[in-house]
Length: 252
Image 1 (cartoon, rainbow, N blue to C red):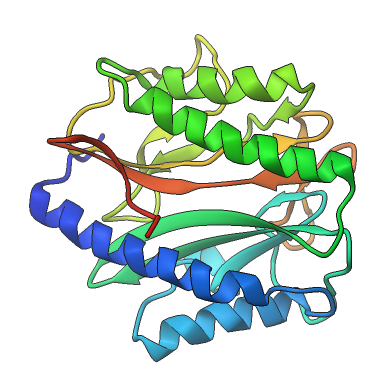
Image 2: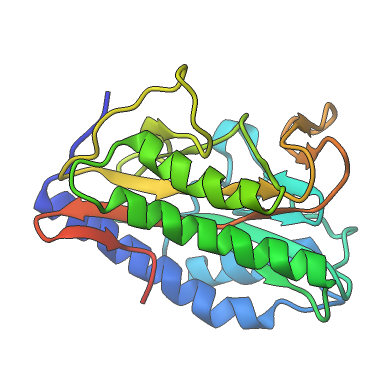
């Protein structure tokens, strides 16, 4: 069931989202070669703790960290580790949920470490562009969920990229994952509700340089990798549909 938020709830979610955007702006530039993915998680988690903010990912279904830090061929849900060191040429996505007074925000930024290849830079640039095309599609009068999918997949496939099918965006705000699901590919099998005032959504393209197919690590049960080992990219914003139209909440 899609939960339509009232103005008071959207204002609470907005506050959470602005804090998340502020955290990315402050911590993101500090991510560099030589750091472990554990170090990255610690930077963000310490920022949350200093401001008495919640980390909904920590402990969610047993997940062991405050953030997901996914490097190179890891699409999503990369578990931070002291043994995984960022190196020049890597691409790393940091996916974070933040909780403030019971309201949850969700956003992902992807960082290029040092000098990446032209192919990896293009993947990152195109995936971010897919996000904003999806947001633009959601903002149009009468838009439906699959309009987001069409915008995202249309650009990705023009570049020969794989659009992940096993995972998708979602409603957010009062819980970390709410209805509706927001796939990044078009299918007659996917639900296609109309986008309405009061909806708060996490739109999040997950785009692979090669195949769309992915595999989940059988040992940790979380880490999702591209099936062909090629790099993946992930960008995400939380948006709300208000009286004045669509608002991107996770920006400053």
